[in-house]
Amino acid sequence: MHFGDRAIALAIGAICALAYLVAGAGLATDYDYYGRLADAILHGRWFLEEAPSWLNELLPCGDGRFCVAYPPLPAILALPFAAFVPTAVAQVVASRIAGGASAGVLYHALRGLGAPRAYALAGTAVSAFGTTLLFTSVDGRAWYAAHSGAMLFLTASFDVAARGGAPVLVGALCGLATLARLPVAAAFPALAYLAALRSRTGYPRALALVVAGGLPFAAIYVGYDLLRWGTPLDDGYARLTEGDVFFNHGLFSPVYLPRQLYAIFLEPPDLVGGTPFFLRPRFIGMSLFLTTPALLWIFAGVRLMRRDAAIAATAAAGLLALLPDLFHGTVGFQQFGYRFSIDAQPFLIALAIAGDGLRRGVWRRWPSILFLVAMVLSCAVNIYATIAITRFDYWQ
Image 1 (cartoon, rainbow, N blue to C red):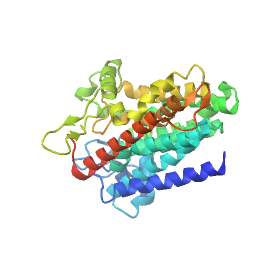
Image 2 (spheres, rainbow, N blue to C red):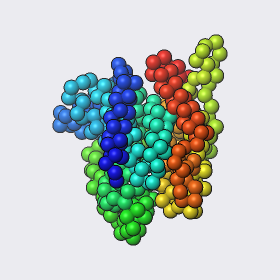
Image 3 (cartoon, rainbow, N blue to C red):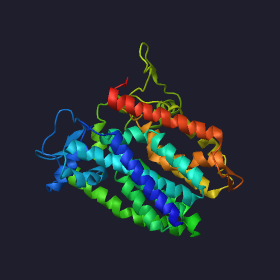
Image 4 (cartoon, rainbow, N blue to C red):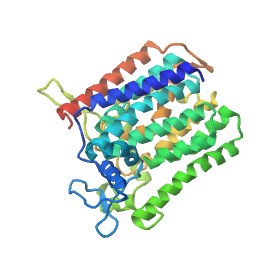
């Protein structure tokens, strides 16, 4: 690890976090589940004492008690701000800082994976400004704040694994990410394999250490469930799906896979006549590859799996992180793009830049012109959508 990479990573993280804060200046959220929970924690409570009508996913968890159904990490990230600003602001500020800071960690991870500086910078730019992470983090409502928090710590786990760092730290960081978004836990076997490859440790030992690193956070979540629901099982999500037409086959089912694939590959924006803003994002979502054309290079990256074990581990981590989402009852709406992709974003970005730059085990020095064009287009789409939705409410 060169000092230059560490310094660049810190600078990128700070600049992108500031950019996200500026992009969201003056904006808060009505869906401040986490901000309210942060305030409750500051007052010594793990539950809320009231449930406003618009927060319809708060669930009763005792006499005069209401619980947030989701994992608690985003509320913990909001704690430093909840003591000084309204809860709706504390939540979005934490979301923007986490989402923006993840860019610096991703740069460091891509360099650790072996990408030349130009490719690491290109991949970082795509992630920070050319994916739905930008809108999701800036908007910062409850479901979105969870993605930005998970992105930060999952990317850190990927960074440690890619550099052959301590597997127990890989597991701990993955466990932290899981306390924001449960699906990302599924990536741990592949992260353990990557850590084993890079550190030249046996896979069984690396896997055991990754599990050991993650176990304390699993215990925290089980304890949190016992506090909320009186059972170690995650009863909150099951209660949310009761009577919901989108979950008529349960929370997860193979039956839901076609709707997820349609959302990933085919979901279009709306065409609205009579206005210069004729392309409008649809709240149900938009195809991952229309939202971020640079991710089309993932398919070229996947072809490298047979020759490069580290790329194979990265691809496996991305697939495993997405698997729970692929069988989930809804596609993530209300959203811009396909927000579930953020659960695998560090790995998808790595695959995309490898697809353009890695040939027979050797990296090209500079990204191709076509990839750079796709990168610019990706950033244009996402910056346009973020401005159109947050500032002009152009959302169909």
